[in-house]
Image (cartoon, rainbow, N blue to C red; front, side, top):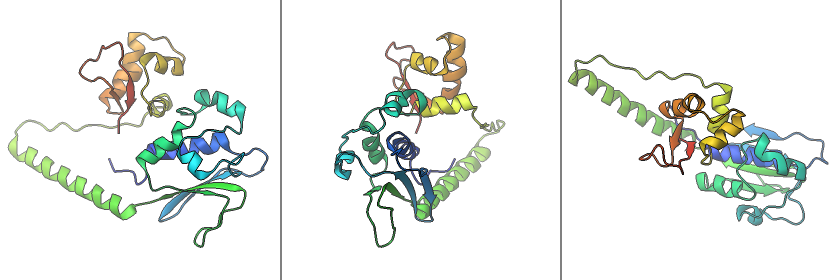
Length: 223
């Protein structure tokens, strides 16, 4: 598998932030622009009540839409008030926040909050090529050093429920939380189908791998 130019966690947090905190007084959609060297997420409305970019980076939360804010945890892969942007910056600290300003290269509308995320296409491609070359060398060595039949790992497209679980586990979740998310009972057959199978596919991982049955066990998206 290739390596994403922009961490999935960052994209998720920024898009969710735009959905939850956009201004509903402006009849304009949330827009995502993909350029050769950057991705821009445009959210209608500047920061409310004197909130600054530095406040947002430091985790200050000032909800604009209380209904969306209150129900975000049930509607979106929402990880909590004030923590999303800080978490996104941990994965990708190069993002630039623009609160209704104009730049020489990029012109932002005066009534938009814009997040600009640089793309590192060349670096990502080079790293991907290095990984592919290394894997090819390992494969060739294995073919030469063993007479055993080669077993290929088969990947498959995740179902919508599995995709939802993967996104939901961007932060560690208990088995009960996952079952509640799916609105099914916390039985062994359901855990096998929706948790253990995703661990075997290396989509999820245990937070306490050495003790699978630990009562404090949680599951998170594997990086």
